[in-house]
Every structure is written in C-alpha cells, then in structure tokens.
Image 1 (cartoon, rainbow over the protein chains, first blue to last red):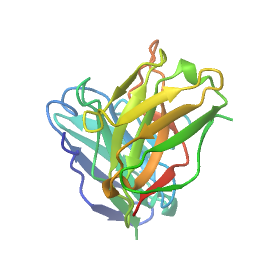
Image 2 (cartoon, rainbow over the protein chains, first blue to last red; image 1 turned 45 degrees about the horizontal axis):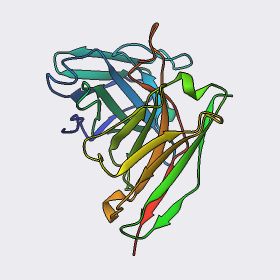
Image 3 (cartoon, rainbow over the protein chains, first blue to last red; image 1 turned 60 degrees about the vertical axis):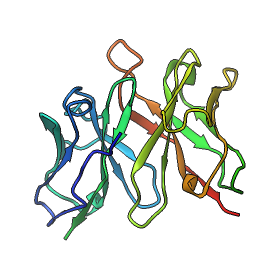
Image 4 (cartoon, helix red, strand yellow; image 1 turned 180 degrees about the vertical axis):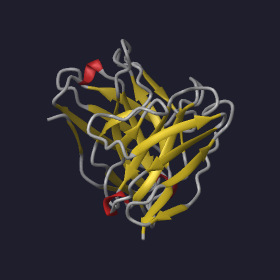
Length: 111
Length: 126
C-alpha cells in the first residue's frame, strides 16, 4: 500500500490562502468519503482538523476547509496565521485490507 | 478531560520485544475503537503509519505489514490499551502513538482519529 502523495511544501504570507493536494487511488481517496487531515507541530502529536473530506471538529477554525475530486483531496488554509506553520498530513480509509493510508506530508511556511 | 497518556520512552536491542501502554481518561475506552500508529524520527517529521486497531469487542486487527509480530490488547477494568511489537529491528525505531477513532453517526466507525496520545519514542539499538 503506497502512501498518498502530497507536495513537500507550501507557503504564503499572513492573511493569504494556501491550498495543497493529496493524491491517492481509486481504492482509497477515490473510493471513500473518509479523508481526514491532521496538523502536526514539531515534537507534538498530530491534531485532527478535517474529517469526512469536508467536516471540521469542534474548536477547529473555519479557516480550514477540505474538498475532494476523484482521487485527489485538497486542504485550504485561508487567512494564514503564524500558528498555522506546521506539517499537514492527509489520511484516507482504504477498506478492510488496507484500512488507513497517510500522505507524505506538506510543510506549510508562513512567510 | 479526555486524554490518552502513554508510557515513557524505551530502548531495546534488536530481536527484543517492546510493550507500550496507553491510559485513557475522560471517556470509556471500551466504547471506542482504539488505534496504534507510528512515525519514524527525522527532521520535519516522517510519514505516519497505521499499525492496527482494537475494536470495542476487544478483537484486534493488524496491518498486514506487522501481522505475526504485533499484539494489541485492552485491560477492560482500567480501559488501558497496550501494543506489543516483537522481533525488533532498527527499522522499528519510531514514535508510537495510540489514538481514538471518532464516533460516526450512530456507529462506532468515524474513520478519523480525534484524540492522540503524546507519543512514545522506541529506539532499537545494539
């Protein structure tokens, strides 16, 4: 089971928006609406910010939004803030044989 | 407060086994699916890898990659979940996380991990 493909890095100035992708296959991202996104700061555990492709857990700012088209999911961070500097991982459910596969991670830098 | 607290860092020799514990508080762990994941150390972080799940019935399922050398268990009296990995090699050096699967609508399956432990660094070295 291969990892989902994410761009290594993305950047933007404070207040700007940044969008980056997460590409899988017809067996994972394309097959299920169970894509989730996690934010990870250095030395910390990942934090859930998006689940079921587009939904935000309670307490997550609405600056974070998710979408999906075919085998590719995307995360958009609007109104970038310094605290958004982190590594972001996507994750997709892939069925009983390969239940969860993660992306390679995208490092977001706020310039 | 809902939280997962894991056991401390450990150093093992190649070929040994390691057991990591994950204490739950603020919720009843037997009402949730609990997962184990790991992340190899490295600058900027390395990718996350799913290891296995223990269902509310205490039945475990494992990633095919680790089948045969991983065991997930739960102490139902305390709610603590455990991960044991055997036949360790240097490739198993990583931070190991326990995580709770969020509840879905009317189902235990939420397909995302909403609560994470703080992580346990396991180092495999001669």
